[in-house]
Image 1: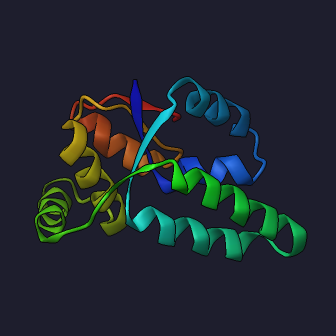
Image 2: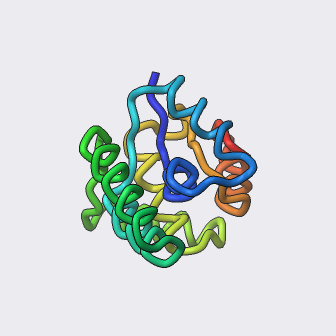
Length: 134
């Protein structure tokens, strides 16, 4: 099995929150992770914004390790066009539309989407997709 992992799901691995354990289980149960190229930018930015010192360094290293084993969906012109179409139809936020387009490219809604982002989850469910996490 494989799963599309968005930024909010990755962040649950490095920042302890009430539902982090649940996300850890989902990631353990689906060992093949897929994500869009922009997830690296979003995740690294949020780690630097939310953590500091040793905690930041440990989280950064953990993310580098996780990212190295993640299957990356590149953001090319076609995918960006798909994201724009999704954003127009669903009113999804730009980064959410990029996640949805990347997931659509590799699974077309057949691939589960792991997210902690309620708005993105609602859009994906509206498209008939399987969403786990929230």
